[in-house]
Image (tube, rainbow, N blue to C red; front, top):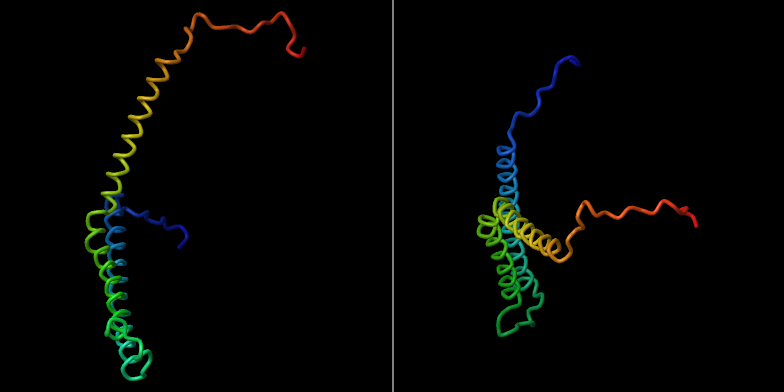
Length: 142
């Protein structure tokens, strides 16, 4: 039992990244589905509160029941969630983030190189043969 050697994971990093991305997408879609279920249940609750329990029946902005406005606002938020999951995350994924990171790092390296050459031109280092040596004829603690 203790003498058996445990096999280490033989998944290469690229395969692991694909698995992690798939797990992330599944979690996003699962949360979207939950949001949809809560949205439907909430809309049914709004209708029950307004029509059957007479909650807020006197409040009718723009001659429309309040639960319609609440459902429209919630639907707008749900639509943003849908766009985020299916549209934005499909092209702004990990690969896109890495490309943007590489682009920004390259830009930063170019700026650093430009500044380095500017500093070298404006403030050249002294020649190696003409270095200043410390005076040794007097004590340091004087």
